[in-house]
Amino acid sequence: MKKSVKLSTHLAPVPVVMVSCGDMQCSDIITIAWAGTVNSDPPMVSISVRRSRYSYELIQKTNEFVVNLVDKSLLKICDGCGVVSGREVDKFKNFSLTKQKGIIVNTPSIEESPVSFECVVRNKIELPTHVMFIGEIVYATAKEEWLQNDKLVIPEDSLVAYVQNRYVATKDTLGTYGYTLKK
Image (cartoon, rainbow, N blue to C red; front, top):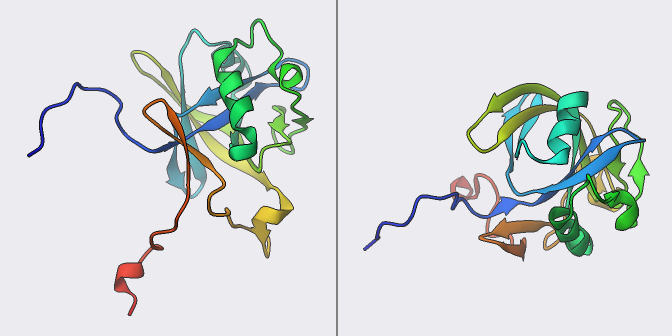
C-alpha cells in the first residue's frame, strides 16, 4: 500500500546538464537538473534558474543560452560548476573548459561536452522560486563519434542523470519506442 510523502520535486531521474550563458568575453556555466523538452517543432527546451544566480542575470541580458549534455567524463566538472558562483570564479578557466564559439548564438558552448544545443529564449515564466526559460534550439553540435549518418545516436551508459541528490549513469536499454506493438 502506498503512503503519503512530503510534497517535493520527486520527479526522477532527470537529466543533469551544464548550461552556458553570457558571451565569449563574459560567460558562466550553471549546473541544472531542472531541464526538459517542451516542444518538438520547433524543438524547444526549458531550464529553471533561481533569480539570485549569476547565470540568471546573463540569460536575462542576452536572451540565449546553451544546454551542454554531461557524460561521465564531465561529472566532476559538472558538480564543481554547481557549487561555485560564476560571480567569483571564471568556471571555464577554473575547470579547464574550452569555450566553443556559437554558430547562431553569441553564447559559447562547452567544447568538451558531447552534445550542445544553442537556444534562443522564446518565453519566460515567472515562478515562485525559479524562472523558467523556454528556449528554441536553433543549432546543435555533437562529437563525431556520437553521430551516425549525421543523426545523433547517444551511446548507452554515457550520459549522467540526477536522482534525489545522486548522479547516476544511464545504462541498459529496456526497450525502444513502440516495442510492445512489435511482433
